[in-house]
Length: 271
Image 1 (cartoon, rainbow, N blue to C red):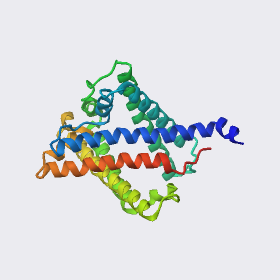
Image 2: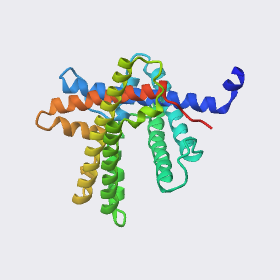
Image 3: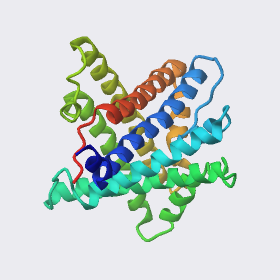
């Protein structure tokens, strides 16, 4: 029986998915730690997920660690496409279900790009020279027919994703997908508080990024667009900037921990 489970393809998909969640958590944890250091004046810098990969490779045994993260990210991408195509969670084929499944596929593509960057860095053929890619493809979108509407709509959708993160944090429905029975009541409360804090911080970042895209659309200026790095920089430049940046940075660390918690305690349905 045990050998059958080990050999069954779904068990490998589940392991890849859990490894993927953990790798995603490592990436967000690094982004958050670097930003927290910048906020509290102990070094560090604001960066995005690709910058986190570059930071990781510069550490002792960095290439080995980054190779593990790359494998994990590839596993996460595979899991997202399994969710989109095979629909193990039975989201269905109605409008809501298809929207969620398309969302999984888009998420898979985005993290596929991050996994590709990780592999490039490990092989020594990638670096930090891709920092303006957001502005590059925003400029490409703006140059299309109805380009301003496309970019503005994208910004509104990203803000919508931000508010969805707020909803997830408030409702705590994600708790249903976590098997926390082996934890004490106190431990469960801490886990839930960390997860909700992480979702709140991610929602704030999404809203700022979405606002950047709306600004890019209304100004017809791709330079106004920005990603995670620019969102953190924008926070730092506000009144009480270090406090705002520190709050969101610690929230991103919490989101990284949430991903690790998902890796350990998620009740994954794998057909």
